[in-house]
Image (cartoon, rainbow, N blue to C red; front, side):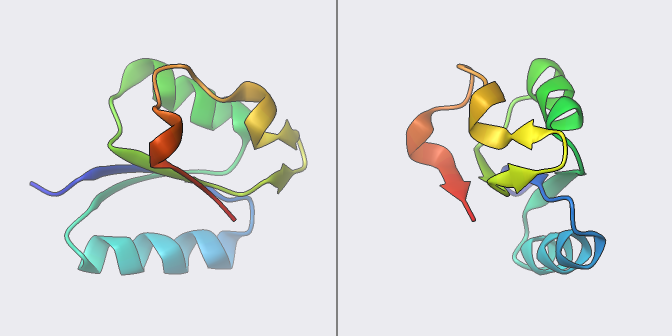
Length: 77
């Protein structure tokens, strides 16, 4: 099994393309559209790293980051 990745991206096309690419690299991707969805995923699952869109309609993804995710594994686009 590959690394577990949390993707937070509100743009549908980007979310699908990034998810597909990461999946082709052998990663297990949980793709979310909103800060709230990402927060729920962080509460339920363990992720090796995350890719967060910085500006989202429901807020700034950094405002709601979880302490369960080591900041060295956080990639912001």
